[in-house]
Image (cartoon, one colour):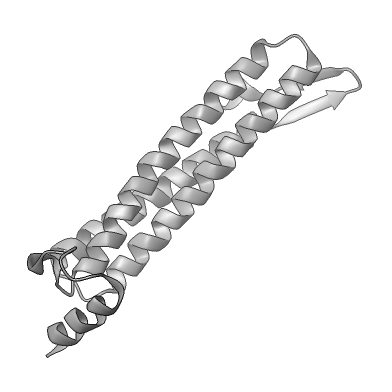
Length: 147
């Protein structure tokens, strides 16, 4: 009964013939959330790496204006990484709450915890990297002290 309602509601949004009959199950939305969460996690790691690269390039710049632009770019990439991890965590939480098998629920919980740890690590590393003391034109970075 429930699957028939599910099939009928899908036909309102998806033209017939675009989905296979095997794809119609109650676990499909949860699986989609898990799949999207995994993609967001991988994408967040790439964004963080881009931010690290921009930050390294900024350190090697002698001109202040170029350094500022590269630091701004790095900050943008770090922010994107954080946002994507937060969205991935949300997707995994929502997938856990769906009516899915225990195997998928456990997988979603493990992935959510992994994303949360990664997000915490990114925030901690970024907090250490942005700890600067500035005395006029002289600035001291505490970057390597806490590793």
